[in-house]
Amino acid sequence: MIICIYYGIIYNGRSDSMKTPDLKEARKRTNKIVETREYVKNENLSNVGKDKKYYIKTYGCQMNVHDSENIKALLEDMSFEETDDFEKADLILLNTCAIRENAHNKVFGFLGRVKHLKETKPNIITGICGCMAQEKSVVDEIKNKYKWVDIVFGTHNIDRLPDILNTSLKNSCQNIDVESIEGDIVENIPVKRDSKYKAWVNIMYGCDKFCTYCIVPYTRGKQRSRKLIDIVNEVKDLVDKGYLEVTLLGQNVNAYGKDLNANYKMGDLLEQVALTGIKRVRFVTSHPWDFDDEMIDVIAKYDNIMPYIHLPLQSGSDRILKLMGRRYTKEKYLDLFNKLKKKIPNVSITTDIIVGFPGETESDFQDTLDVVKKCQFDSAFTFIFSPRIGTPAAKMKDNISLKEKEQRLYKLNELVNKYANINNQKYLNKIVPVLIEGESDKEGMLMGYTDTMKLVNVKADKKYIGKIVNVLITDIKTWSLNGEITTI
Ligand code: 5AD
Ligand code: SF4
Image 1: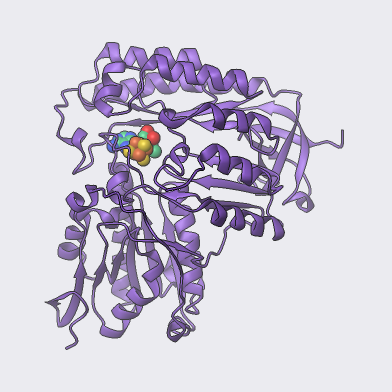
Image 2 (image 1 turned 30 degrees about the horizontal axis):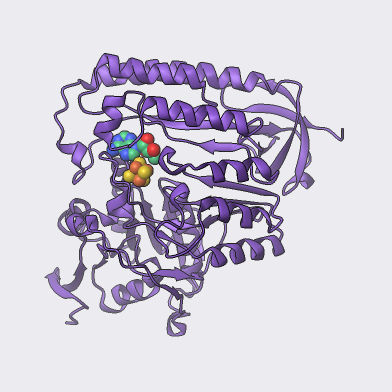
């Protein structure tokens, strides 16, 4: 019997390899400046996936979507081929999200289906990665109840996937390889992008804000910014390849560069990316805390930086914001919001809001509604607070019933929908540029987004896919617009 790396556990005649996560370790922050290193391909593994198919299911945010683009390329470098039918796959990977309980439930629900399949096809390899893999409670559950899962790896060692997979295959063992503490920034991990026209570009990893409800600082580690030159070079390369749009990704993009010993910040990065000549620049997610004037001025100055900002509010109550550790007040949020509206012509602003945070009173909730009425957001993602093990808010006394929380969510959504619809009405009979991305869910239509991130369904010939075209808006829905291409 082969003993895998780290310490082996013998189960069902197979020797398993364990390096499991620890949230307390993950909380630690050091001043060490993170090093950058280049990805090195292990050429010996190029044929491991020959004649085999992989299926990957991605949950959660754009960061996970982009991680999956890296994972796909790593697997294809091992000769695996992608399939979108999990029943035909030899390797099934779930790239998971830990942000709320329902994301967690969805993953375990799907795992049930995979188990069923594995009963008839025992040679299928299964793996869990992403944010849930960074949670000790999840990994313990997999170790104890899902012993048939072959590999588990986290967010810090995606580049090591080929070796992790190979170890599990060679030794026929459950290989759990999760780093609690982030490692170096790895440049040039291969990527298989989902789109030929718009690309995700990581500008930083991790988060140091530690909002009390949020698991991300634990699952994604300390804030680490990529070097400006590496990001700009990646965007230049995308321009050369014909990409029209980039979205700069980070948990807290406005804090970009703060962790580096460098003399640049987010405003400088945005400007340099705009100067590459890429047609559209977007960025998510912003925290109201680090949104400085320099950044606002750069957004206003460059036509190719899109007038769209996602600015999470979370709550409109100063008391709750304090308990959440958000470090701004309702008044400060409104000041920033108004400044953005004043300085950036035609800007659309969306937000995230949590209801039912522990101890949220009716009057706290009314403060949230008040901010929504004042800001009239273009749209909002709204959530019921979900306690995450290991975060401070999970230990706070919570005496509000689920029914009450659901009622608050319902009331909030009614208001959010009302303003989304009012904002969309402004587009009726207007001509707006739209990047046509592909076919729409609506039959016979194509879809794309305006500068301001409004989803538009267009009846048009497929030859327009991958082009920015002028669209006359002919019909308004709450969450989308309909239009037709115009030459005007
Ligand atoms: N419960 C509910 N919503 C949460 N979010 C983050 N953590 C939680 C949680 N524990 C929401 C926040 C964040 C968005 C990505 O998810 O609104 O901005
Ligand atoms: Fe989570 Fe707050 Fe960091 Fe956003 S800023 S990822 S909500 S801790």
